[in-house]
Length: 272
Image (spheres, rainbow, N blue to C red):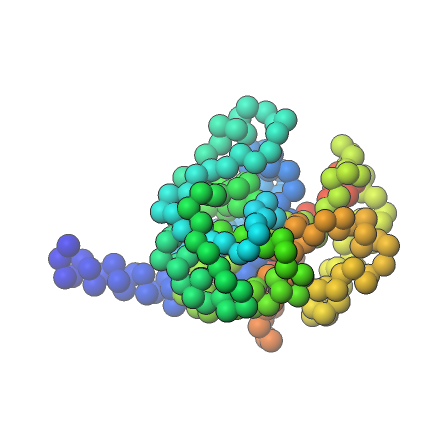
């Protein structure tokens, strides 16, 4: 490579990395959103067009729980079809984005709350690719994932999230992917939501707007609706990672707001 070409590439890389990236929480819902044309897939596509161009994407997905915290460090992560009972077209869907061993290493060095180990076996689960295939359909932005340590309490997840702040300055788009209200045991194949799900989704929205992160961390104290809405917390925790990254003067905007299938909140928001 010539000196001029190398300088040009470095300049381009630095110009991307110099943009402080927003932070997203996406209510990802059904993996069918990856192949269906609906209000959510269209909202995610519009979001991808509106965002600054990221250098890479770090996804904290509800669908990767581990003992200890791990970060994918392979150069070419596989597409994981971690679900069952869906149409063949969904299993044929691939998202061949590259990984980023370099940024995975930087992430490990950035987090001090806990030890983070590199992972070479996971890939991209549907919490990541089913959303990102709509936002960046060309799969031309590197993607890596940070796992949820199932042994940690919510406050520790929030603290880890806050330690990712410097990655935003390096052009990394951080995406939490889950669902604020998520009870598959009570889910119904209808568009009519349960009253308790709508009410608790509104409660969480109000706490987010008010920046009452302490109440959101201690969600188990929010009454009986919390037990229905969050029977297990793997879909809730990615939201805490994103909220921990909100700066004092940063704006917050909701890009999807709906409870569907009775007990699934598709609410998503952007910080910055």
